[in-house]
Image (cartoon, rainbow, N blue to C red):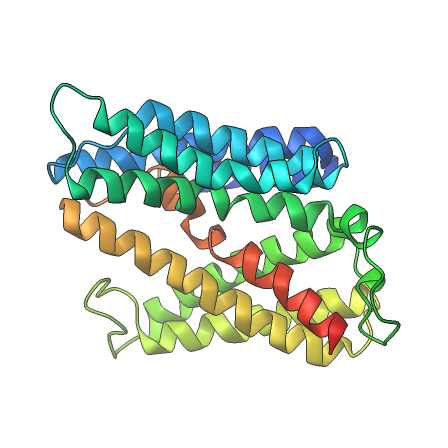
Length: 283
């Protein structure tokens, strides 16, 4: 069952990345919506009562607005205004409830907006990188952003995350001895090294296939960044599950737990990759 679920998830991911455009934006919105419901469910186990519906709606608007912005159908200032305005709306909603909210209610709601709204919206920016680059007068150098396509950079990021998960799992399971963190005792330093090595190999292979300049160097850096960010995302979710005294965030995906369990490694990665590309371009 775990293998079948994993295969279906992989096929779905490859399909929406290939389609791109509005289909990709809708897919990101749907996945993060399920994950947000699981996050707030975990929070409720600790006595927190977040503004679920308001935050859910705000996250969806934020992600869809990002798509419209990068496609030139919405001004950047209007798109940028959604995050602060949504935060105000969420706080106001909690303020107007019959029973006043607590600091934890506000903090969890705003965190949900940032964690599963703002950060995942960078997947849209990565996938639509070609459109964004055309709007910039970037420097002419060997690492110019024009050498990267949105499809390629999104695809390689996803594959590197998958390879990191696989490498860390198998190496950690067979050779892991030293625990990496009390947050997740099953993770080991050996597994971390295995995940990084797998990520680097995948990064170098794909960078070479896409014929990027300095493909080996970029593949190594890419592999390390993605693998570490995937680990951070995984540990953050483990920390929240530990606080809620839950093994899985949900049971939506047979053999894989909840949606948040499946996408936690994908949350922190896109924003760092996105800005790393621009930093390389302007160096």
